[in-house]
Image (cartoon, rainbow, N blue to C red; front, side, top):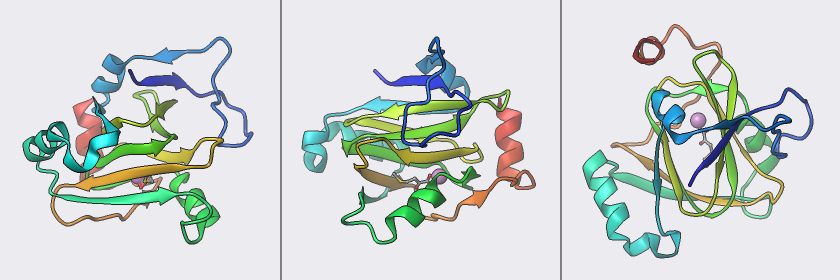
Length: 175
Ligand code: KMT
Ligand code: NI
C-alpha cells in the first residue's frame, strides 16, 4: 500500500521525510480525487510481467525506458536533482514505476498544499498532465525507475508559474 502525507514547512534537506507532527496521512482515495493513479507490481519480474503488459496495453503506454538516479551513474546528478525538485508541470501524464530503491513525489492538493508520496520498489503511479509536482530521492540517494509514456516521450518541464497552459486549466477544472 502506498503511503502519503502532508509536508511540514521546514527548509531542511529535501531527502528527509518532512512529516508533520503528528503525521497527517493522505489516503489513496484522496490521491485519486487529484487524478493520481496507483498500481502495485512485482518489480523483480518487470521485464516479463504480464500485469505490467496489461497496464501498458490498456493505457497505451507504448514507450518505456529506465533511469537510474544515483551519483555514480547519472551525469550531472546534483544539477538534475535540483531540476527535478523545482515545482513544475508537464503537458502529458507522468508515469513512473519504481524498480529498485526509493523516491518521493510531491504533488499539490486542491488547496495548494504539498502532499508527499513515498514510492518504494513495485510502486507505479501516474501524475495527471497539468498537476504541479516535484521529485526527489530519499536519504538512500538511490532509485531505479521505469519511465512510461503514451507515444513519443516529451520530457519538457514547465516550472511554476505555468497557469496559462490549456492543460493546466483543464486539470484545475477537473478537480
Ligand atoms: C519529473 O519530471 O518530475 C521526473 O522526471 C522525475 C524524475 S524520474 C524518476
Ligand atoms: Ni515531472
